[in-house]
Length: 82
Image 1 (cartoon, rainbow, N blue to C red):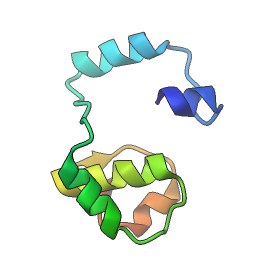
Image 2: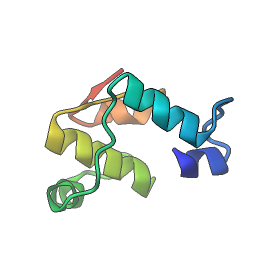
Image 3: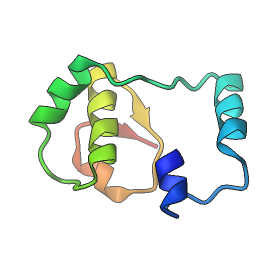
């Protein structure tokens, strides 16, 4: 999220610290990158050129998670989006 904010791709009135605290409060998990995510990442088709977004997709696949996004490109992958 920090990178998206700094690139101007994510607009928010809250600071990163405030968002972190709110995610903790509502029990949204922050998933660290693990070797299994990199294995999924290596097999992903190139529907998306953004390496960070591709990493998020691989984490969602490996952990059976839902991604909250407005980016329609995520729908091309075998993952749940909201």
